[in-house]
Length: 325
Image (tube, one colour):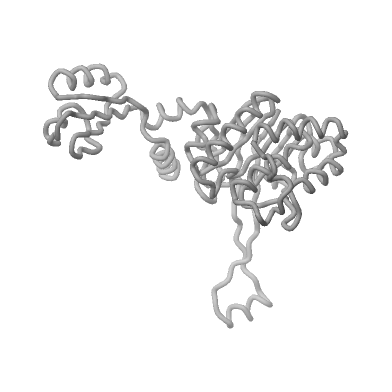
């Protein structure tokens, strides 16, 4: 569905020192620097996949999504989405995609979201019966209710984001580019948005690329992740493989019937924390069974949990390694 080959996007940026003298000098002689927003990345995505597109701020994620959506022209390289070259902005291509940005909105501020839905129906030439059926389905999935008839300015951020997603899906796009769709939302609303995105993908088979700094979004939605940093590709594979590559150890959380000293759990593994009646250990994957057995035999354990290290720590270490390399 999506093919990216050696994609680069470079910007020529005017650079000058602050102050009146520097501003006057720049009128006659300017200095420029080249910013490599995307620098030779290659990946492909199959129809129906949900892929997390990750990286720190300034990594080139949004630039890549805008290039895939046809908003930016690549400096070099080849990009195809369902057989189309995005920068040509062909009518058939535009009817297949949608770019949703958490910090941008298409809803008309003083009008109800229903007006934006009608506008998009006309823009994309969606038949009335198809539009009615699709909006009914979206309203049920997102639990919109009477929200669509209230002025947009009277809606909360979470309510607006639900309506934004509905407006983006009026024409039934085959490819969804989601750039921080849950930014600024509370925990409960983030769960609602994740559930909706997953169900929409499963029911329609739409291909989905998600960027987010909330690792819970990625863990809940994306079996596969593509990681870029400083415009270059750092990793492409499953989320489980990423964790195993960067942090192959496990986190073992032990809860005791009484407070435990750090020295008592230190022989079991690397102690991440030990406070009161709880300790968290970092243990090699192959040693988990032995450590758990020894803990149960020698310590007053009442509960335990074994899991992967937090995804935030995994990503932070991957970025550190890629920059060091």
